Length: 247
Image 1 (cartoon, rainbow, N blue to C red):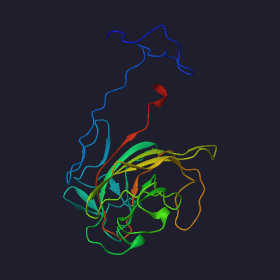
Image 2 (image 1 turned 60 degrees about the horizontal axis):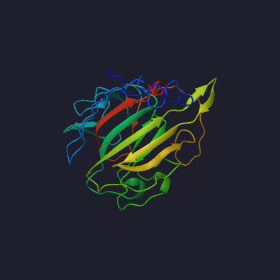
Image 3 (image 1 turned 180 degrees about the horizontal axis):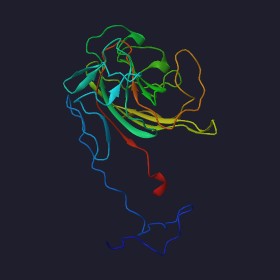
Image 4 (image 1 turned 30 degrees about the vertical axis):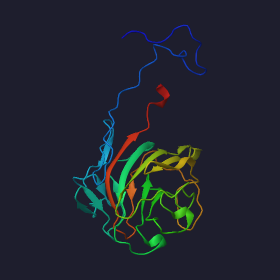
C-alpha cells in the first residue's frame, strides 16, 4: 500500500508517530449493524459479542446458577414477575453495551411502580429502567438515572409499548492492593439522546443509602432486574473496550 502520509512532520507529544504519519497502523474494519426500525430490532456490528439474540436464554441464569425463568416470545425476553433477576453467564468489564427494551403498553401504577426494571453493570451498578412517560418520580430514580446517585440530563422516554434503545459506554473501576485506583465512569445514551457524559460513579448503586467502593473482580456478569413489571428486552450485545493503548 502506498504511503499516503508524511515522514517529515513533528512527532505528536507522547506518541511514537508523527503528525499525519503514513506508517501509523490503520484502524481495523468493523461492519456496522443495521439500525432498529419500528418493531424490527437492529443487528449487532461485526465484532460484537451477542448476549441475547431472541432465540433462547441459554446465556442467562438466575444468581444461583439456575435457568433463567423469564418469558421468551417473538424474539424478546420478558420479565416474569417474582421469578427473580437474571444475569449473563459471560463476565466482562469495560465495554460498549447495547440493548433495546419496551415498557408495558398497559399502564399500571405510578412513580416507581410503573415499568420498573434495571440494568446492573457488573451486577453492582444500576442504570435505571422505568416508564417515565408522563410519570414523575424522584429524580435519581428516573429512566436512565445512575440509581440513587445522579439523574439523567433529560427525560428521553418514548411512549409505553414503543421500543427504546440504550447505548452505554462503561469504564469499570480499577483496584490494586485492595484499594480503589480509578473509579467507574459511564456514558449513557437513550434513544439517541445523551443522558450522562462520562459520569463518575460514587460506588455500587443502592436504595435509600449512600455508597462507597469495595474491591471486586475486574469482570462480572450483566444483570437485568425483576421488579415485578413485564418489561421486554431484545438485541443485547457488547464490545469490550480494548486496544486504546495501541492507537
